[in-house]
Image 1 (cartoon, rainbow, N blue to C red):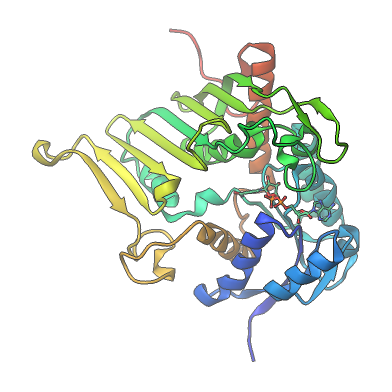
Image 2 (tube, helix red, strand yellow; image 1 turned 60 degrees about the vertical axis):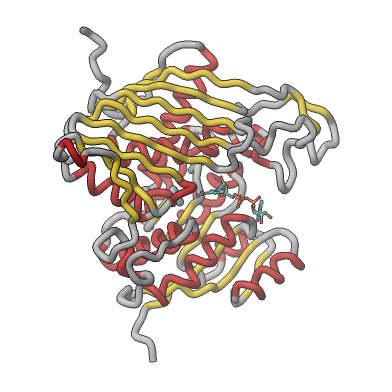
Length: 390
Ligand SMILES: NC(=O)c1ccc[n+]([C@@H]2O[C@H](COP(=O)([O-])OP(=O)(O)OC[C@H]3O[C@@H](n4cnc5c(N)ncnc54)[C@H](O)[C@@H]3O)[C@@H](O)[C@H]2O)c1
């Protein structure tokens, strides 16, 4: 007889993230046996009854719902996991919090700061456990970057640089809206690459390097009109196809960020590099188990970029997996986030990034879009603004 406490999950959305999260819940107890809580796949919700039943059968959910309100109303659900497009995050999260459920929400938290603020208010009022799936933080090499920075090895940080590059929307025939292409519709997504891709870069950046205080951005929409998959009409495109911004961090360093869906040849190239007084680090999602590190203090004859294969037992999360030298994958970041969420229920500590943390990322995203629209610098409203005086 198991002594573990059940955490009864109700998940909404059966697409890409529905799968990664379901895998996380399914795997976590096998690899983190010390955790007191054990996820139970209680219910899955999506609007098409045949498809949601097939998903339930595939992943082992006990029951299905086709209306998320019915899922939230159930007494046998402890935690609601939101894996739906961005336009539904606020309504579902607020209703779930009001029903006293824990809430795990996909990123970006919302379409706008106003929506995100209402979500934070609802979570605070209900006092429920919460987290937002900025999962890249929990890849071992990225977590190791955090440990290296926090140890002070880099010294004063001067530069933070990040890219997130894709190429899937170059064709003008890609529609906007609808099931598979909601990301192209500003109503559903809130923004283009800024909320979809740069939000990840901003979350990681502020976790590693502190608050972003002000931004100057340029955005472009290369294809101005696209057919809407639902209405069948050719309509103006409201999202940003590409965005480049530079910024100040509260610690005085400069940031440079670029994201686009028009970088032919790149499918999901997320990279960052941080340059400090003594040392630099860089990371690349396409080689996600590796962290590169350069330390100027190394003896001259062996000084150079070290390529750290982050697979040893004393490196983050890796004592949970196979044997030293064997890598893990993208899906493990979600398993790790589930593990950390379950741990947070034991300790009572928040599981970052919380809704509050994700609100800060939302503020940066909104400042970026406002800066691009007004062709001017915008303060994010977070952190203390760095003096621009010489
Ligand atoms: N953390 C990450 O790296 C990451 C990666 C991809 C997507 N996301 C985020 O996850 C969310 C979902 O993205 P996705 O790629 O899984 O999308 P998707 O299109 O693959 O899946 C969306 C799912 O939501 C369902 N859905 C839509 N409206 C619904 C409603 N009203 N009620 C019930 N179900 C509904 C759809 O049927 C579908 O199953 C988005 O917010 C996205 O930004 C995060």
